[in-house]
Image (cartoon, rainbow over all chains, first blue to last red; front, side, top):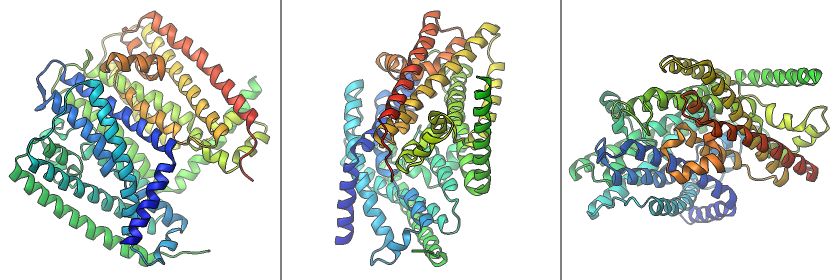
Length: 264
Length: 264
């Protein structure tokens, strides 16, 4: 465990060292949040609610998006693709550590910095728009939300890992990964609540693991889901996580078996 | 002048052809990237259509008008991506020493840096965008040729303005050998151009018109076509580009003059 803790600390220092890159990443992300917030505000207009969301809830949805994007959508997929393609992965495979554990430690360091930055941005935007935020009053909601977000993050991590592992067989896995990430953003509700979609399409998406990453946790936070239903959804999310984890590990094991490193 | 244009046209064609061959070599990867780009376009379009099932107008624009803004954004953005793709690798070009070769070639290093890397996938992706823009035009009320002329000119002006920004980013890469995220900030901020600038709060609207002129690049052409842009703003758009282009070129030349080669 100590090894991963050290890896986490080093990665944290590295992330903080590249301050201009971090700042620019955050500025770009903030622009997207402002953009989405403005669009939703224009949609609500003078109405009391839109798609069942009040102005306060919609602002909270958009701000929660910013935090969840920082916590859920920061995987190690592209790094894995690069490391397999360049052969750098060999140096990790011969070390006495789990590559997944190591990657999770690095990912956690990245998440730590980005989530802290996102909280500052959320505070700033909430202050600027003076719209008021929806904060759950029931402590159980916070617990359910925390559990949902934790599993979302792991779900994304292993899903991305599984797709990136295609790099063991082809040097072209960047294409499928790019495609997956774009699809995910929409299917997870990272641009808009899935309520906006026609009923049939929304139900089809709900049968996939994607809405569990953003849409479902935010709805839990907004107390749009009764506790009993939230528990049932958490159970389903846990099952998706287990299934994706097993698949990702199976793909990884097969990939490592077929992997051949050449040169020095 | 004609000989120079012919030379640069041939260079562009050659580099575009090489890029195309490289992308055809990586069929799976290219297919994934292409599918992702198409998916992004279709999802946003579906999102817009779904939103208008619940509202009549957004910021005073109906579905067809909002679609026009979205398609205009895509046209301007994709044209710029096709033409100025090289800037995305500017920092690498400098840090790996390739820029030194650009300087000794009988060709403008600015041209080599910005225009000589063509993403063929964007050329394929722009085809459905053009078709969808045509379909949007067909659903607009009758517009005189002056409207279309203003639209075309302001689009060209928008692309020129984007070129100025790309030159600035390339110059920064030459000057600092860093700031690789600068172009990604531009991409993220450009996201705000997906919606008509009228959806934003007045302060943001002014910032997008006078500060980072995303509105001039993406919203102005569509507004001119709809007859909702005054002559004063049209004049401002062209004046801005007339100032931005020489300024960015001056900054580029100054950065190149200070360049001392960053590699061995």
